[in-house]
Image (cartoon, rainbow, N blue to C red):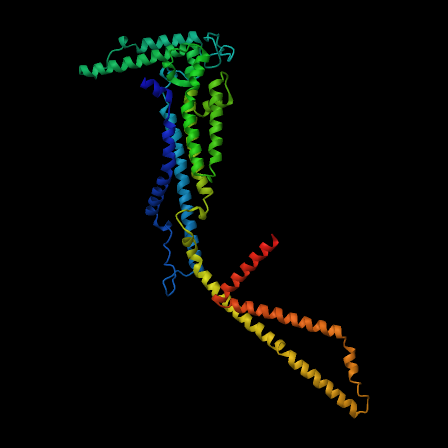
Length: 464
């Protein structure tokens, strides 16, 4: 019961390889970069000098220091990116090659000394999916038919039958001879099982797609039964994969590699369905057979799953390098820590602003002073001017009211408008002067800001 359950789970080695891909590149890249710095110390970035501070030991903003800090950060980031990329490429090559060579000599065709496509078959799927396949094969170059396959098996049976083999002369003890016989017998039993599976067209079709696990399917006889039983093997891998990707997407909502992971998963799923359900040669099987020759369909599927795990993890790793998260998403830093480097600069800007306001107040005061004191002096001057004109007119014998002609030339309405304009200008300039005066110190600035907010609030209430 337990063995059947494990068989049902299928090959979950890609799942464990997934976790290796998730954590290994980060640790290996750090280790590789440290080893590189030890071998080539000249490439290690030089340490930064201590940050300048003021009399109160607070950090002071220094543009030169910030430039050096940014250059060193970019230098370290470039080295980490190169180390990470090298580790990812090497681990990808290792994963694919290790899976490929692990499969070498493990299928029934290799056990019998045949290529994976050396036995000809003609399976008109799906018209015969409910039948046991027994059709006349179509031979192509390098293939053998059923009679040729039986002849090949008879030659192997004569050559490897345990009763027809003598132990080597270098085996001295009886235990070594028994061990040798046991090994030969197990090898011959495996060859017989391979022949019995491949000699049946239906079982051969199922074996090519689902592997040695079909030996446990005792109740399957037709192609449909093998296909339906084999499709159940897809559930564990894809269920776990979809659940894992969904869980990752839940905790990493801003992950730019999510799109590529789902895209690769859909491509692998479509390719796997194409390989399993098709009897004719497709471009997917032709491409895989060209890149990885002498492999069956179920071995190609296992390799595709390893490639999916590698590609999904590569998408995650490279997306984190190509599109790093913004600094404000770093939850280990609070607002105070983020603002600490620029606080000295803000304090200095505030001091400059206060000095500028003070100078502006002085300039406006100097401009306002003559206007504020010009009203009384101008009226006195105008009255003295009129009296002097009347006196001159009397001396010259002119009429006494001749000086009033000048006064009559000025329109009274125009005089009133001019006085109102000057009065309004004085009021506005005094308001500007008072605003700047308030902003020149901390207490006045706070009161001015509070007044602005209150006025805006009252205006909003009035508009509603």
